[in-house]
Length: 402
Image (cartoon, rainbow, N blue to C red; front, side, top):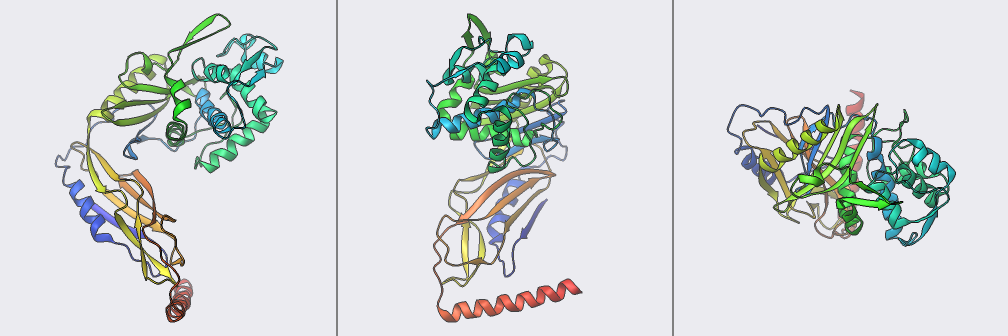
């Protein structure tokens, strides 16, 4: 079944025919009535095709839960951003304070880099301490070095999370150590992972390093996928009693990159097995259909006071839909924008968003931008649009009272 709805502003119109036609073509692929069994036993799971921008599987994906060391992905984002902006240098050193040493070093009996008290460690080495060794001492040291205190750094983590659209995650420290208010969702974790991969490709390479030695102690990367899963190149594992065993991973095969998030598993063995199982399913069980080419019109938005009545809405990337073989789930789509859009409009201005669901799962959410410039219209056009907006406002107020 294909369902199309458009949630738009007053005087809105959408180019529905092309989108309906594309979705019907995709839906025709699903011929078998039986739905596939769940591909994982993990309590919390999320699988995202980063190449296609499509969600493949979601299970309690929006449930905030303790992230354990997965929270350090946000710590790393802030450090990567500071490096990219030149506010931090890889060769710059920070001192291992007594607080970092006691709470995150050898005395803490937690994951540690084994950095020595009062030693000076470079940012490059501290990054490997966090990524490869999951060192809490390294994470605390980076946080304090960048923001002056871990609390100030946590405030920065929350501010940056909002900028990145991680709407259901809250951070209280740089390490992921237990705190009742520190939570992440699987969807937010995947979104953060995709951002790290796309925005910081040079730094992302560190996630694939198999081991790192510090203080004459060699530790293997804790990501089980790196050892034997073809194409795996990141990212982070986590464990506390509250969170269970979790993982944010990524792998590339045949030009497709998948991002996986798991949490709440009982053992490290379960985590590794379920991660491989879900990735295998993601790489083998889907068929891809293109909905729209890059910059092809997806819909139209009504324009107020412009030389044209409508502006085409396009996606700056090709839009693909991935559907499980044999899945007969309903496919529904919606274009959202607040309109009418006021002229002048510059080509490339973000106007709205296309959302596509398979069953109950939101699988595609991609921004739509103006596909053309729309300058101011002449005086009669602006006067007519103003009158229509006024009449529409009266009608809306009357409807609200009825």
